[in-house]
Length: 259
Ligand code: A2P
Image 1: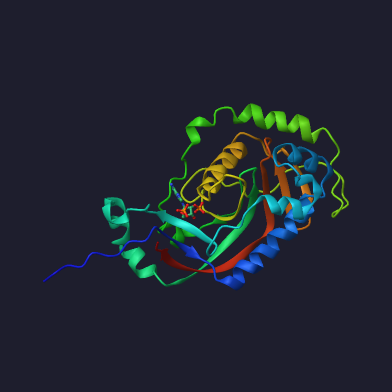
Image 2: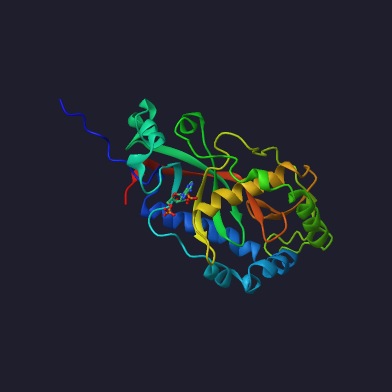
């Protein structure tokens, strides 16, 4: 009897539908709008993302929305998946076969904004982690300079008074939230929402690894800026992390993307 080989996708992942995509865009536009109103942060971002200081429209103009549905890549197979043992092995796992076409509710815990990308940061639950097969620490070895950069960011931004026109608090406080994801299974999980000039979606994962590294090298006392519904930390070199106070739940379908 002839054994058929599975047709493998470019990647497996969790996909959102068009209306959720639009809702997500509205959600992060609301956050970005507030960020572009924080005086000292705006100045700093302008250095790394030219014209970001002119408001949300010019900031968004820098980032192209990736083609296709928003998704979280769970396993990237590459353009020749049929030649990859690794991809075949993944597709053959029981948990993968049982999950294809299933509904998963995922949690968006925040956003990251860097000169290269805008991404939503995801917290996977234990079932979702069983499907996760991306490299959570890719590029970590080359980030030894982060501590110096982050300290530098503190002196350039936190010594100035934060003026957030939306919250009106205008103060600089310490970061007290207990949720501090560290490098580990699924810590790189994200959705790419926008790509800056000459940047590819794959950069979002690498920039998230970089930001988690900054988090691990800073204390709880690292300064943050309060905006409506979220806290913002600036790690230097145009890198911002936004921590949502209430996670956003989004329905997704686990599937494959074929080219
Ligand atoms: P991400 O999941 O961060 O958005 P492309 O269209 O460039 O081929 O990529 C398809 C998807 O697979 C994108 O979502 C992308 O990033 C992810 N991806 C691309 N290249 C890689 C890679 N080398 N390693 C991991 N994920 C990748």
